[in-house]
Length: 71
Image (cartoon, rainbow, N blue to C red):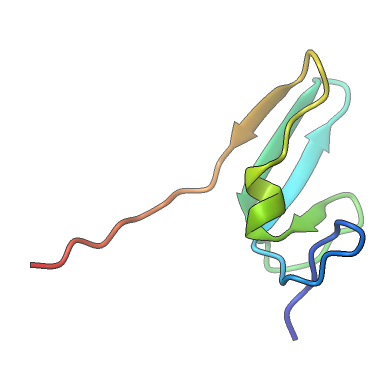
């Protein structure tokens, strides 16, 4: 069973994992982690793409998108 998006009222499946470093004022978005962790937040693609960090924080989106080219 897929993990759901952590945003309230969202029923979409999670596609990315959001994590924070409060001391360093940083936010990371990664591909969905294998294991659920209470200090991370799983988000659907829509919410992951719309994430904005708190003012003064750095957001790093570490998801890699690979495009397949067909002949």
